[in-house]
Length: 476
Ligand code: NAD
Image 1: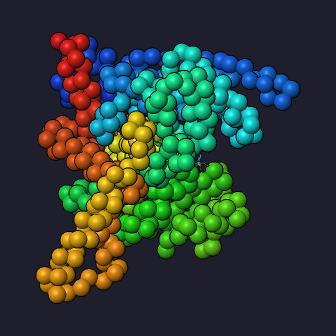
Image 2: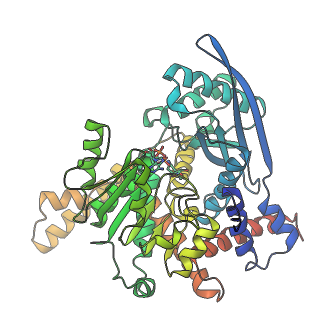
Image 3: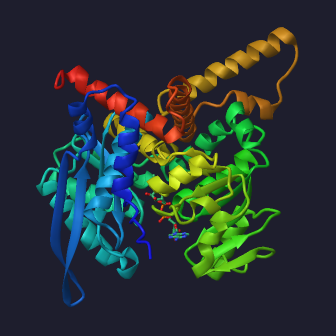
């Protein structure tokens, strides 16, 4: 019997991707090693009283790169958290920030708990204790390290983190910038919740506009009418699906969740599906769709569609299932959904893979906007909205006067709209995703041996971080 070689884990995959790209950067080995390693790893175990028992909880904060400060990255609550996973996620954050020109180093936090096993009061206790440990070690602060939500955490946890930090650092006038993804009413920002899914949409939209790539896949350009399968209907998956359906006219044909999967060739209305799941507790049984029970839920990833969007967990496309994937485009909304070996098979089969470190960077981009808002102590649009509105109105009045033709009230309200915070956030995010895609595409076009978008994205990130170190004069 032949022994199967074990597949590299998530951290191993990230390191492999790095090595593959590093060869195309022209940077010397010492500098590459500095860019590759994690600069600071903090592991802590703390006790929390849960009911009548004390639980000792394992937690991490990893700062991958101090080339820019603060460092930035989400906090994950999951039973699967371990040091290597947090290191992999922190590493991806550095490259992600560099790709979208967000001036942070990468970081990530993890607390090894199943958040669904605890009530709200217990989760608050754990979150406040974890934050206290970070404060004690100087691992949090608006100019040091700024966490955000990730798998198993949301704006509620970010509010607890902010409040705990403020308790210790009340004199810090910029304290609100110690964490992002806060509730909008507590120094958060409009549009943060949808940001990653919206960024995923913008990224896919850019990719399907590239004529040569679409021609090679046998597809026409444009999002309209493209069929999509989505794995995971959480924050990222549900917003990606909603915005792709609403703004891109894409057709969602398959969805998988923890309880199973559904497939409907004629299309699934995503709002109806979310309502159906809320009412019944499951996506299974959705009218007109074919059901796949829990043990077969991943089969939906292998069905015929144009775009497959893994938006749940890492290590979902591996050397075991990659060759059965029929989608022409794999859009990595989740972090690390494709293993290094899985990707090699996909590329050999001519697929277009839009990599996580670019595609899901919308979250950190809008987190950056939130941090800027916190440091400026003012919401975006406050100073210029009315001024712009009045200027646009005067211009319309002038055109009406000079042409003798009047503009309808509806057109007037569209043309003379001063931008609100949400408009500016969406516009900034769209600009960021388009710009970053163009940079990556350009590298793939210019460097003869860089054939895939992931390698191009890594080359872009490594080069930018390397240039920072070179400019600082740390490396010759
Ligand atoms: P989430 O917890 O809101 O959603 C994940 C969803 O996946 C849940 O609904 C869960 O039930 C489902 N799921 C879990 N296992 C599954 C399986 N085997 N098959 C199908 N569905 C499954 O988390 P999220 O914030 O949407 O994050 C999803 C992914 O996106 C993670 O990899 C995360 O690191 C990444 N990401 C998130 C953000 C963000 O802003 N939230 C930013 C960048 C990257």
